[in-house]
Length: 556
Image (tube, rainbow, N blue to C red):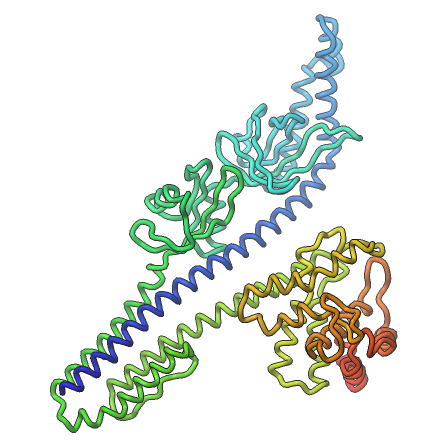
């Protein structure tokens, strides 16, 4: 009985400690990762919103009535200032039919701005004079942008940023108003950084939001006490820290000028429910174990020795190897140990599912990045997906293991991810590249590898991203590898990339027929391209015309 009590106590202590510590660590890591995913989602949301607003405002800034009214207003003001006496004033009044010309022109601008605000449904659409003061404004929050108000702008680009006015802060996009070759002001579309904006961000990121201006909270979706704690700790915020008696994961979504947007999620709140259930289940198991131990005989102790050892060994092995994909098998001899194994397996299954969701979120983000990269140039839209499909066709024709095919599929999808760091004027240039521009392009494999090296589970795909422009003759880049020194996966993606590039239309040339593209690949097989990969693609397309049409249809 003494041995039984000690053994059960040790096992339960180990399980309690391991589960509580490991579960909390996993919750902390999951919440931190969730905030990082939310931050990336916010970045994509803001980038898309800024692009949409810039497209809209660029079109709206061509409003001829608005620009003409502003130009006339400032021209008449300058002319009136250069003249003197009642005679000049009467002439200006006569030009406007007896009505004050300033009022008429201001009304015209205000009417046009209000009409533009109703078209796009923005919080504020404002026309600013060349000195950055509000000339006229429209929209639901136009009362907060009265005429003559100076707008202090903190920019993160030439056409967007944060504008701070006495009544609050606004995210804005702007475009110059040009009348002929003269700048007569600018047109601004602004969104208020208020509670509604914070609630939108909270829904997007599935986390609490606090917005501050000059270290003063202006909006948020968390309680007042927690908001004050965030503001008080703004200068020393860490990724995880205690606020208001609980541990929180915290990220700074935006820090621009005097404006800060914080995102936070309670680790204690997320872990509390799981911990309570685990403690209840394990407490029940502990109670039964000690009750049975109190009335057990030496025979029961001897009977339990073997199953206890097996369960203890399985848990210790899984904990030491950090491999929770396996399960603890029930002994069939002890209800208590079987219940313990079932609870442990259930909890481990939940943790494994959480890891799988995190991995799926990584992959979804990666696919979104690849799609965003392709979307920068309408001529390369879908390129990464097509290269991935073609590379899989080649790999299967070469009868590579499915595990290698899976690596090639994702590696090909990511092969050009490094181009996200290159300028649009190079990527979208319709004319041949200069030597310097080509050198910039050649940086993208190494840049892509450096980006993806931060994510450990993407390590098998790094050779594809970094080496897919190496050539068998050693004239590739970035390292000039030769022949078999180049990984098979990188050689396959190189051929798939070239095939799609030739069969896809570009700004400077139409798409080439698949037959012409294959002829080009055969011509340079052994120098530019891997012979086996070229032959495999040719055989796959010839043996499966329908598949060839599918690849070509995707390319078109």
